[in-house]
Image (cartoon, rainbow, N blue to C red):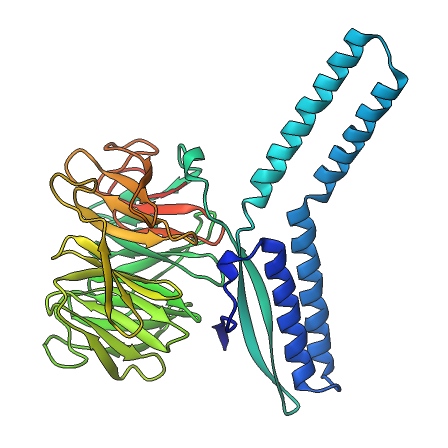
Amino acid sequence: MATSITTTGLNYEEKPFLSQLAVAKSELNEKIMAAEESVAERLRERVLQLHSEFKRIEDEYNCKEVTDEIAKLEAEKGEIRFKDPEEGFMRRELKRIDLRINELETMMEKSQAKFRRVEFEWDELPLENIHCKVGSIRVSAVPNYKQLSDPVKYAGTHSYNSPDSQEFRCPRSLGIDPETNNIYICDTGNNRVQVYNESLKFIRDISDKMKGPAYICIQLNKVYVTQTDVNSLNVYHTDGALSHTVGSKGKKELEFDDPRGVVVSIEKDLIYICDWSNNRIQCLNLQDYSFKSLISDVCHPKEIKLTSQEVVVLMEGEKCIRFYNYSHQLIRDIITYGEDNQVGLSSHFCIDLDSNILITDHSDFCHCVLIFSSSEKLIHKIGEYGEDRGQFKEPKGIAIDRNGRIIVVSHNMYQCIQIF
């Protein structure tokens, strides 16, 4: 079973990218040495694959072809100066070379922007009584928001009558599978979840015993869906097979009244569910779905996300985004919304790897995505009211995939899913 890990005492977000790779290599080697000297052949092959992947990522980050061309151009500049040709010719040639070097450096900077964070997924492999963790390494990007314009991909049609694939009736929220980068969208009106690959090619829908799918989270090859019509949480395998159902209408433990946002913490072994009408967040054990604890005294919690240190909740009743620590103690409120505020009517939100907060706003004549820094400074705005590409009609769910692309679902007639 794949699990995310964080190494004690290391903050990967504050380390340069190449230093992160060095830490990953060191961790891998320590795990292998801790297993045994006589490591099984299957494990040896996997280790070689991992080291090859480290090398590939490092070479891609260093942009070897670009740096080689820059080095040749610098050498060419030296030769031109040494030969001391006619002065006007020399100036023109040096200017040409400098322009090309600047162009190459810009290309390298854009390419390296894809390599902002390293994420690790380790698989525990029992091999001949050896328990050793090896796995795969992923790179996650943070978008350069100021360069965003029209969506690079879009799909989907809003329809009140047809249940065909790629047609939606009230698309509501979305989640990204961290393993495959597939996109899962709650098609609430059609009582199903539609699944697309990262190129927006339809894969399948999930509909078994689904009534009013509202919010969604994908972790460890499981799909967690809250259902407002039957006040429950359904858990599916990523192939669409129903695995577990928990909950019914009520106010007791493991009972819900209009459940909304759901998120899974692998490190804490918990499922967090926004119990909207009961004004609380229920925490369930990830392994057996039993009740664990509550975050109480919250007013209509709507959506929930996690960072490495905090539980972040969109409070519809309080009209703000609220931060708790993992002991469920209130830390702060930010980005108050409503009349006379920067956000009019918040619907959904997500957080990128630099702790920027992206909010979909569907207040009158706004209908856009607003991007705030962690200090509440408005960084960028995407879209406006309308049906064309790059415009929104009631933008709802929002997420960032592992390539740093922003994905938004809305009630647009001809492009319910837009990727920026």
